[in-house]
Amino acid sequence: MADRLFLNGGKRLQGEVRASGAKNAALPIINAALLGDGESQLEDIPHLRDVIHLQQILEHMGVRVSYDQGVMTINPQQAHFAEPPYELVRKLRASYYLLGVLLARNGEARIALPGGCAIGNRPIDLHLKGFKALGAEIHLDHGVVEVRAPRPLNGARIYLDYPSVGATINIMLAACGARGQTIIENAAREPEIIDLANMLTVMGARIKGVGTDIVKVEGIERLGATQHRIIPDRIESGSYMIAAAATRGDVYVRNSLCEHLKSLLAKLKEMGARIEEDIEGVRVTVPNCLRGVDVKTLPHPGFPTDLQPQMMALLTQAGEGTSLVIETVFENRFMHVDELKRMGADIKMDGRGALVKPSRLSGARVWATDLRAGVALIIAGLSAEGETQINDFHHVERGYEKLEEKFKGLGADLHLE
Image (spheres, rainbow, N blue to C red):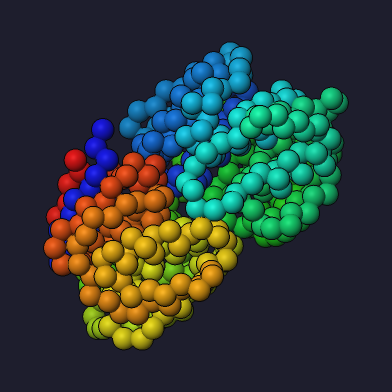
């Protein structure tokens, strides 16, 4: 399997690209389909490594899954829900959503602690705190988590110390099977959570307040099957918009929801990019020299941490002004900095802050340390002189569907080996 991307910089991106369905919505929604009494059909599911790994996990548990042309059908009625092997779970952090789903459905779950990108400490203590508040017993043994409800789960008031997306989703899933009302305070507000809640509501769940910091879930005995289309991937959309700006290009990103990208669009406008929004998507052009800006990552609706590495690559191409990037979400989300420096970037780090000065980048041999860092290196390589070789490209394939094909469609000179 190809694991190196070669690209030649200096090409101005032009044309149209369509964003796929959102990976971070698809993974919890696929898990949530296990709560349905019958076969559910999910549309615009991106063909990604993470999705394939989750399909393999579900099939190991006896779930009937078919997946073709972006449409996935899931039927859990004959499933045995055996503990999935570590070899599968370790590849996919989102496998932890099975804890909330199986706790709601069967009253118990056992799964190894999952893997994912090494971008910092991402414990599931808030997830387990929520399950415990609902009445579950928690056992941790040699990297395996077991949650069990000795009696039916009971609704509870749960305060999250941090507005964790994963914890909000997992507790919401478990609460669907609890008696009475569960109130999640300081809940995350990301669009992917709203998409999940919309699907669960159609299945029969009673959920209020999603999109605010207080979510209320009324437990229900049984949920039905459903048909649901995944929202567009705002991180993929944003990545192509940033790449367009970095190459002084002219790109229309179709299937983009502007309301999900307000913080990014505001920063691009502040830098001097021209943004044209319509009901189908967003066009990005750069008529003049870009300016440096300050960026601070925050939970939604703040600037997404998943766009911070790409934005840093863009900031190296500002024509004037020093930029300050502050990362508040993940402590190790600056691993791309050393790789950008290999290409000539002038970046000085200080704790969770980084000063970025305009730089003339040159192609180099670099390594994708995680999913979003890999895309940042693509953006840098597109802006650089000469050839860039990005190694460990498998990280990027976890989150971007048909990336090589889409960039080539915009005029980029790149190929996988």
